[in-house]
Amino acid sequence: MVAQGVAPSGLERAFAASIEISASLWSQIKAGRTVGDALAKQIENKAGKVGGWLDQVHAETASDPMEEKFIEACRQAWRASDKQGRLALKKTIASANKVAEKQVSTLQKI
Image 1 (cartoon, rainbow, N blue to C red):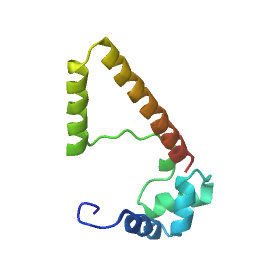
Image 2: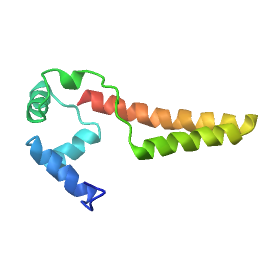
Image 3: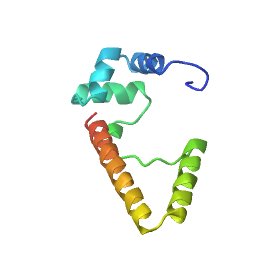
Image 4: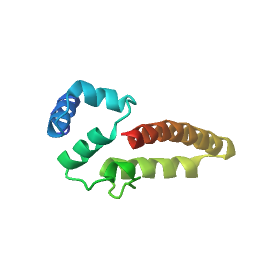
């Protein structure tokens, strides 16, 4: 939908409405607000997920073209780098992973 020109904030509001919560509450949840059992059940139900779905870790299964381009760019950078360049790439990826782990941890609390 973003590719079709829909503003990201509009998508956020539409998602919040689809699970019958306010956009403000959705924003708070994304920022780390704890989600209780009743709200978790509501989200699962409105999203068409089975009970307990939010309590599970879900692996990404589908890639997209941008992800594939990114992976190829990383591969090219790795192959073109010397030892110091590869060390810098590893540090950058480790730093990005820490950010991603925090996001996953927040989502798991939902």
